[in-house]
Amino acid sequence: MEKPFDLKALEAKLKEKGLPQVEGLARGVVEAVFEWSEESVKASPSKLDDLALVVIPPLKSLILSKVDEIDGKPAA
Image (cartoon, rainbow, N blue to C red; front, side, top):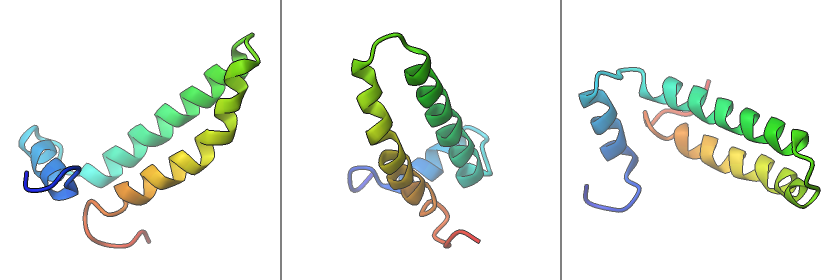
């Protein structure tokens, strides 16, 4: 890896592990993790963690925009 968080390096590592559909797989993982996180926060009895509901959408959007860069093509 030549630079931190190099998406091409991540793609190569994932392909080495037999994951040819890297971007689609990564998108699915991100969607599932954020869905689980939001459901968990809403189900939690603590109101303090409700602050995460403010952070989740923009963070998810940022991460998905980075995932979209994996193959070097804009999302369809």
